[in-house]
Length: 310
Image 1 (spheres, rainbow, N blue to C red):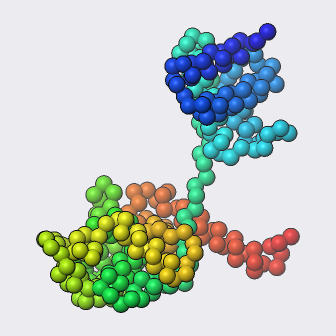
Image 2 (cartoon, helix red, strand yellow):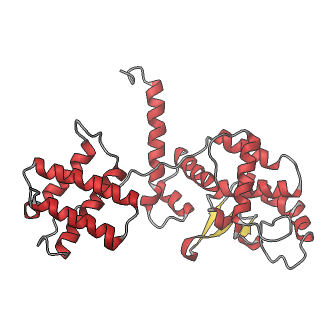
Image 3 (cartoon, helix red, strand yellow):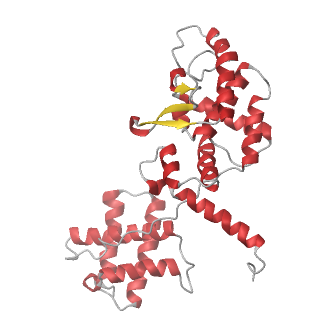
């Protein structure tokens, strides 16, 4: 004979099939996770929903993360998926009158670990920048200026292609960036980026303007037809330069932004200064870069300390 909690689960699974119309794969995941949940409850002699409390649901989450003889430990994302299924089950039980209380309401899925940004070594950055300018054409000068400015300012790709000529102060070595929510910030850049942008403005942009059949406007970075450079085209500029440079790591415009932040912090910059430069609303967003630095310190320690490997 089935227990009350087993009958409640069958009712819930029928609801997912008939009323929610979940896809087969999703339904299989729910069924697998919830049956494991019921086995966990049975091992604790819980056969009725009234016997489930918040501590029991939390214990199930811990059980998922630790694993057992039959199941390996689950990652945060996999355990989170199971907890979502359990929360849905208990919420349904209350709504359908099968239970008076929801013991899973306050149990939150675990937060997946943040992926650390992938920064390129400075040597790879230099190789990419040099490769962008190699042909010496108007477009090559533009590409070098674009990539130099991206790395020098930590600008998002959308911010860079949205720049107008008047947004760049070559004399003051600073650029006006318009970030998320139209928030503006002024970011300094170094002499190499300044030289690259100056060379582009003097020797290349007029050529691209001349190729235009319409009004160019004040766009800083232009395409071969004299129009504003698009995000996708800017992405392609970087990827091709990386290929010519022989850099095999996965590269995107955000890679330059990550490298900008990581190299600054590695060089001793305060995280709050980097926060301002990146245009992050919260310093917690920027603090992930400090984890990169700690990781690099661990690598150095592991190879340099005589008793690091025991």
